[in-house]
Length: 153
Image (cartoon, rainbow, N blue to C red; front, top):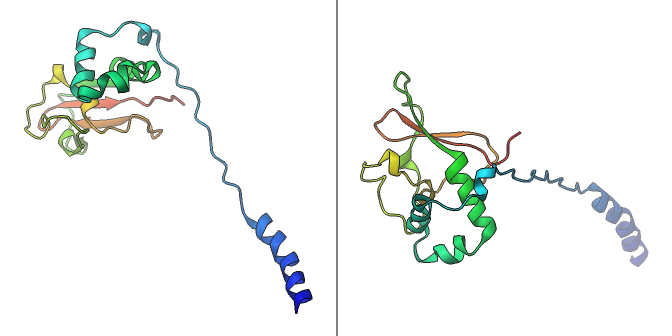
């Protein structure tokens, strides 16, 4: 019986080991930042970070050089707001359907989004997504928010 069990193990063990496929993970390219992310924060950007992160802004953003650079890139290069007067925007996801980050007040839910004061850091956008460009409609307007991907293909 022991010989049969040993023989069975010797036959099945290699089959099990070699039968497993190793999952190949595709590594993402490094994020390439525009030169403007090296410039100091503007007063508006500082206010947006504090508004979104509250008491944790110092620890999570201002005290973390890489995170600060990433957020500058989001605010300066990756979030665009444009008006499309002659297009039907009804098929786009409404900004009111996007969750707010912890601590963000209910600006979108009240229906009073100010275009020039829009703070994308307050919304749970997936800024790390590799799915390409994303568009969101500011409810009941002809404005689209465009989130550019951090990795260009």
